[in-house]
Image (cartoon, rainbow, N blue to C red; front, side, top):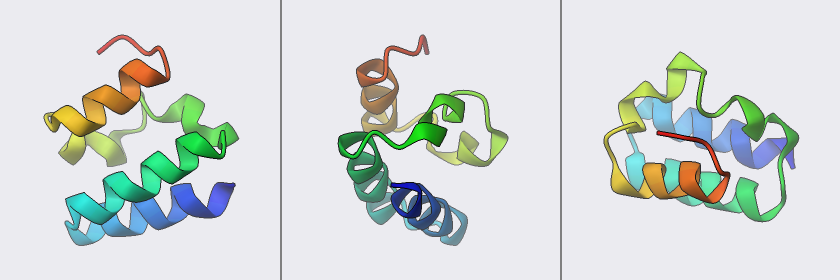
Length: 64
């Protein structure tokens, strides 16, 4: 479970938005426990304007 979130973070750090979001989707599907921090961890800031990231936040029922 955690590995998908870690993979997403690596892709995000490398600037690979598409693969980062795909890995995040996998983490959501697998109900990764650390997703509870998705809305507050600054490392995800580069994705905050992407509508796919915002859809993930809505899916997790975070306000955005």
